[in-house]
Length: 124
Image (cartoon, rainbow, N blue to C red):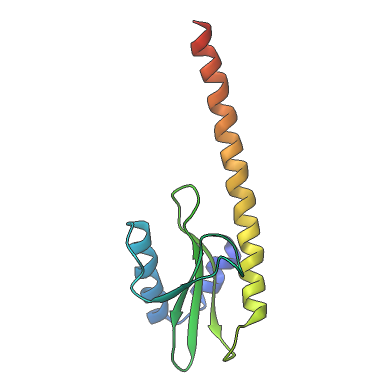
């Protein structure tokens, strides 16, 4: 989770933080979230999921758990429109791209760390 995503999450009311936190914990344990949710693969990126808490006000949290066996919280916000809040989705999409860059860099680093060890074993 980036510092900006953490700030957005901590700006939510405490009861919503607890609810979404319970959902994210369930996802970490390989379960479905308890809250309503929908896939945002088309609008944010592959594996992106939106947690939904309707009401007045309504709240959302966007996460991804497709990479590195990790749950990445991308964004959390109070919903301010009846339709798609494009500004918030753009923020989630930008953070998804940042997360994907970090994931790709980690995979590359892990791959290069394994490669020399594999060559050393073959040389023996």
